[in-house]
Image 1: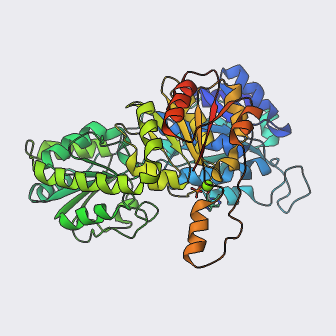
Image 2: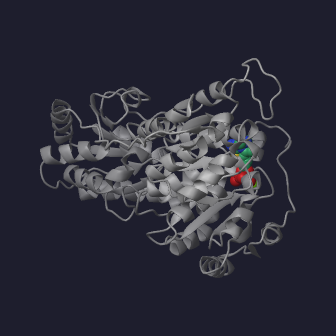
Image 3: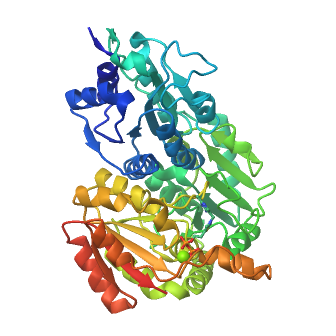
Length: 521
Ligand SMILES: Cc1ncc(C[n+]2csc(CCOP(=O)(O)OP(=O)(O)O)c2C)c(N)n1
Ligand SMILES: [Mg+2]
């Protein structure tokens, strides 16, 4: 016999969970006791949204499920925004939290942290919100959650354990995670896809986050086709930028639309083709798409495929490579598009060129950038910062929520401690989750946090001006982010030009704690 809380912690450990981000409360203490007993590392964020963003960052760099643990009610809703972000970007994040007691009157009696229908609220924003109804069910529910999150299109989940079940006694055998084979594509669909691609005179490839585990096979297929490759934001680095066929990342670039228009066949792999990626309008894909996606719903969304291959990206690409001839090269075409792509990216990023160049040099080929929804990131880093590997650029693409960069960077640094990780944010967005600097300092993370300060909500200020409106609620000048960093036990420096910035970045990578680098535009 044991308790629900301990069973839960052991079930998480049995699924390979080594670290959780969480905040304890009256309702989850038995789970906390279980975490210690199960040998699971616990990291303390300073807000539940930070916990779930950190779990997201950990998942993005490792490819594993990221887990956060909160108490009930408000704590779950604090995490909700980050879970919605994970949902929109197809990141497997698990939120484990207590809920109202098993026999709680559904219409409410004023219990501490009571929410009217938390399961319905969470179920509306993640793949599934499940409430267990017995201690005995706990190992099964954890196994089912992991199966849901790691098969097909990855998505986040919420698991609610009635608070009385966490302390109730019970016994249940562990439920092992079944070995999940990746979804094998249909051979006839692969034949049709290869025939279509093989007959193309001017093919190109669009690749999204769904191909993160298939980078080598993607390169192989692109080389056999001699096809230029453009990555989505979440796919950035899946085709290395230093490859002659690697254009870079950015569906919103006008040159991407021109390349697609010039192509007679477009291979789309693991990409939603979402409006939040192609924010300048849909790409001209009609009638010429060969689409590979593990999600049979996603595969018909935003562009109707001429040929659809439902299945795992690596298996599908291997199947295509086996059906296509050897290397085909139209080096001149690729070089032309590549130069055009680079020129546009550099022009849009010119305002931050010295900063992005220094960041690229500092991060090298193996570093990770966690970026916020700030202009320096989406007009700058997305296309102008080089990336040579997938899972190296973390960005809140779909949901576009501010405050992502710092907690996601913390999760990334714990997932890949050997890698150089940098957080890049605007002066507005960084304040949404600034408390997480204290968490990073407590963990002693060598984490540069670069704050690009344009005195407020620059994007929104520009949009107001574009409408001819006077600015309202967008100007916040005069903050000292370096001092703020120091107050939260980090180092803090000002660096407004290339040379001092490079020095500050080099020192920050070698430091015993995070360093806030305040850059005034
Ligand atoms: C949670 C959330 N609230 C509001 C917004 C709307 N919004 C988008 S960009 C932006 C300004 C962000 O300012 P900053 O981080 O300084 O970046 P800048 O635009 O100045 O580059 C705002 C308020 C948002 N994206 N997410
Ligand atoms: Mg700003």
